[in-house]
Length: 616
Image (cartoon, rainbow, N blue to C red; front, side, top):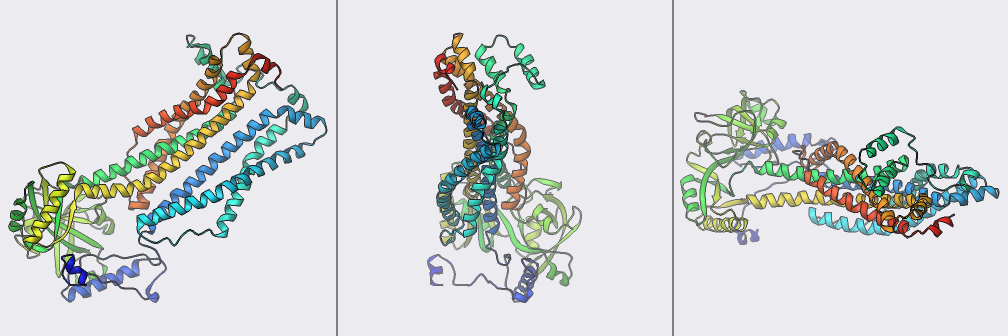
């Protein structure tokens, strides 16, 4: 209690906490706690105690459990998507090995090896890959888990107790490292090993370039219209669709990465759009709430004495509960907290978005505008209908004239200042003051807030709390950035996996077209032209994956924005698709495709006619 004096506070208790008896609880339901809380509220008010806020916690859960669950969900999605793309990457890798060893498979079959023996050989290879991945991933996963746990604990301000590695987690890692690669590799191994001895011995890569399917014919007709294109570019475009199964796998990998990447940017844009919409309620720079009501004229006079103030408004303010009707019995079924703000009728400092009815106008007395958070708790409130709000000992009867959109503001109701101040017997008095600063610079507004706080305290106007709007916005945005940073890590990892898959695809293409590269060399193609064929082909795949990702990104972004909003804010976000994210991913697709094709293109460009003729 002695510390309160140092903080310029009175030596008074202003908070009461209580625990509900176990027999009164019903699982994790908060309903019985809310019922007891409302009864306690009524008891305290009967003892002439003003109650400002009732907070109910879910039994057995930390108060930030929803936020932590949301982060865990995002990490789980990251793990599943990484696993899927890793499986696709493994398919490409096994396909590459089988393509390179086609003749060796034919030789094994020639000397008497059975098909099941060859399959077993490659399955053992996959198991070795899985074990190597486990030995690398397990310690790295533990390290990452430790760092993420420390970070989350710091953000939510609790002691994590250190890293734990339950045996079931290690068993799950081992099972995933072995079973998932084996499952993913069965089909490419079966297909590669099923080749006959004659096909294996005579394998020369892609033996036919004739347009056999409908897609091939469409591509040929399309390219026929662009005869002015350089021959290496035309060959690259044609080669892109020669192995459609492999193209589909590669596109799937890159498309998923691109979809998640663009969706992350859209979630970030939606979060910021939601925040901007919430902050657009307030058209002032600084807000002060007082511990009790003071004369409005005195508050405004003292505020205007501080240099840097452009405009000032005093508002009434109270905390209450919405009742079903004016009967005393309805108090036990009252709503959760509702904050009643009473600005002047013609205020320019708050602009709620009205979705039904109207805003307060001249002549309004007991008119009330409620936001959607209030309606969510009391769905019987309708425009034109009655509303009863208990403030202290008084039951105030209103007529609802409008419903405003609520975003991050909590349950607020708005009443005309003159009528409300008289109803609560505080005529000419106010509990809060809103200020517009002369300067639009954020640093100046913060300095002005500190100067005002000191001045008001010196003149015995006790301040309960101060809100500098840009600082509030920055704090909320910092919390949002936690989510977007997790999502961005997810997107970057998936993009890297997609690039690795494209590298594997281009490597297989080089192996399959070794003889073709030799023919190109024999008729005079330079190293630049040979490398250009594979770089342009990779660019085509990158652009196609961008287009496919763009089509998927819109619904995925909307769904992800909705889920993130519900998990963190208990309401969907104001959806905003990020065009900047699509442009950035297009640039990254081009960059990753070019980088993924450089090594295969370099290997192709180094092949000489002699190397090709001796190629086995």
